[in-house]
Length: 112
Length: 237
Image (cartoon, rainbow over all chains, first blue to last red; front, top):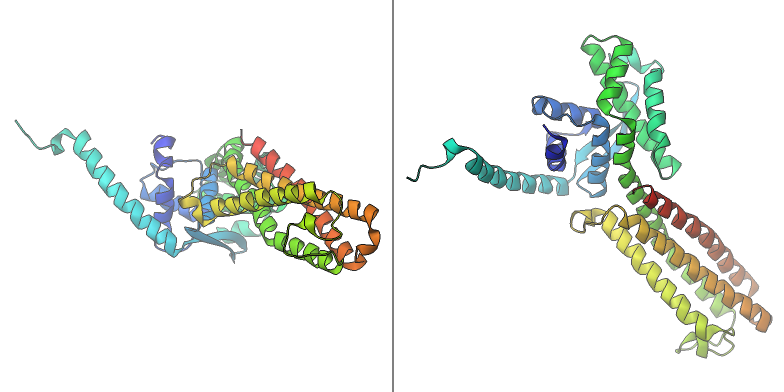
């Protein structure tokens, strides 16, 4: 998948990856890669700044925590982040339904 | 796998990769160190994952580094974020310390027995020569500082969602706020000097010295912060 196509929806996908519970940066990346069947292939290093931006916007919060002798920054959704994810989901459903209707000939009702 | 690599020093490839990213990051050392710590933990997690998949330690380190992407690209993605958080910190500091400095000067002016009354400062009895020009200038500098600092704080925090502030604008606004605060302090010092020449006896030494010291510290730090914000902004182009 082209990076530009992914980037437009990166925020929503990051929020969705945190919906089940708190995760650190690399675990978020693994969720996105596994969940997209390997289609999500942005450089891992560029996902961290996106997480910091969401944190500044108050959609997620981060805290350093130590496990297995390694200090990691663990992210979790805030109530505002949950609301933003719901909104993103609604927008995406409307958008994808409209695009599918237009791009898939089979899905178009026969009019003549 | 975590146990196997956790106790070991990070592989050389990881260190040189992180050094390449760090060299291209702007902003305060502490913010950069935090970014690098987070990337290091991520790289070590990636190495663990590749080791679990059967790669050797060297192969895993190489694979992790190439998965994270070109250091220039990673640093480039962090740069706007670091510039914006630096701008935010400068603006928050100015907003938080501004009222204290104002209060210290109000105490100093009151203790100095200036004939403060409900009128523009230049009409006070015994006001420093030059007040007529200096006070309006100081008020203008103060207004610019307060509004640009408040705007920066608002646009770089939770309001980011609604107030889309381009990354280059935040450090510019913070720099204006910093230089505005610096200008305010300079004008106050000019007034102080003018009063020292005209009527030194009217000044209460202790409160004036305290306020002047606070203003001098703020002036120095605000100037440095303003320059750093401009540098961070320049690095974004």
